Image (cartoon, rainbow, N blue to C red; front, side, top):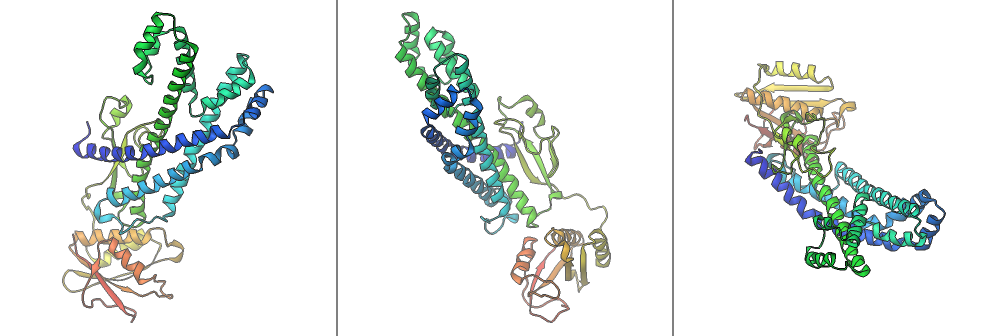
Length: 438
């Protein structure tokens, strides 16, 4: 069973997903109505009469025909992804690695939102085409008038192929007085007694069958929209958590080597048996789970399992350089991309980071952040305080702006140090920061 912490984690993401899905479902239903209104019955009947079903699908239900009706839905899905990433970044991450503000222009988040929105509407369009293809093919095989088949197409928009078959079966059971009808979960139970009396007597009238079938169809369309929206909301929470931690790694706030992901189920009777077996499995941040999935349930529709990211306990240091000179040599060997790295021992337990410079061709690859993490690990193990003077921009040394450097060091726990310290190599104004051992 999931632990209390894991249950709280799943409950938090589930509540957030529940809050998002109704708005998506409403917008999806509105999109279905727009698609229905855009259908031209005469064009549909002509295409059906000619027997050119694929032409009907590829031309009359092309992306160009369907996309205008899905613009608002796709925009909403994009916002859902961005808002979820913001919530997870500013509320889900541990406080000490959260950014001061959420970057709404983060290209990774924007691209992820676009991809999710595109996939969501593409899946809906493909579902519509599959259901229409099934509806038209069945009509042709049964010899139904093409105009009647075309008129019925509006009724299948919003249904998955299996759901259209379910609606047709429901209509048949109403006509034939089949008691299996009472096992259908989406039926309107308020009519059960009236239907049973009709089954026991002369049966339902054609008008009653039509009205009850249409009511069942509307419930099925709403159920389909809710299912799509719920799956999107759950998947978005999984993605948002991943985006938040990816961003923390990219900012240098934490190393992926210090993170583990744990498979967490909801813990109820609806969890798939194979997922029950995976509950509690722990893997590295970039490692797949034992079933090969990077994200729990990524190959299973409507899976509620999550991967909880947590910070692993610090491993015991088995080999730590004794002196700062040994540390510099070790780091130069580990990171050949370093152009310069100089550390100066000062009085007491203080070391002064004089210069750290990465080759131009290796910048923006996280090398500087990795060096800082190793330096901090050594300093903590040896109870040393690190002092650094943050210089202004320097074109010769390749120094970035002071503001960006200050932000860089703050991410690693450095704070402003009053007074002057250090033995700076270049006579330019300095801003001194320090980080005490932890």
